[in-house]
Image 1 (cartoon, rainbow, N blue to C red):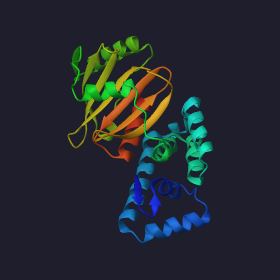
Image 2 (image 1 turned 60 degrees about the vertical axis):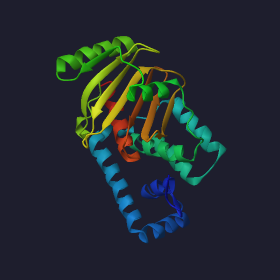
Image 3 (image 1 turned 120 degrees about the horizontal axis):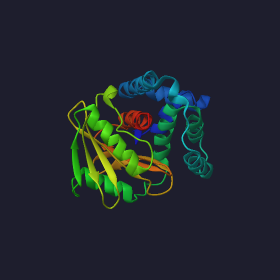
Length: 252
């Protein structure tokens, strides 16, 4: 997604974090100063970054798995570019910048390759498949029970992420047994919309992607143990915040 014809989104993020060469920085700054809407976008991105820092505090330095970093480094080695270097450096530097860098990298990388977990998650969200069980969220004992079930079935310690600090309320959990044991967590957004988080055992190689699909912002976060697909009618920045919060809440 381009900020405007004269500036790319990844340039914009690199400018905000002071990672552009002087000549490029001056050009980007001039474009921003001449465009009130672009100035507002920069202000919003800076506010997002500050908000993430206030939410996660000292936990922002956690790096992503080595496999993901290796994939991104390989991609940037094929197409060297100054802003790409910023993306890789940011990944190693902090968790917030990791998410931002990956989104920027995703914009100029090849189109997303869908796999079964993405198709499963979107089918579940659209109610194209029927869940084996529907659990209404209403009490801590219910959530504790579901955390135990999820931990047992996914073979790793997890619990429904608490996204309330961003205004998202867990409304219920749908349990699926086919094509694989999976859980769809449905959240009500502050604007009344639905945000879904689909969890199952990993369906393949480690992967982090964010893209548009069927009018939704979709984020897949997968390592060699767990696959997680998040979807909602939200902005890129909002998805970044939710993905980071879900990541930290899933196992804490």
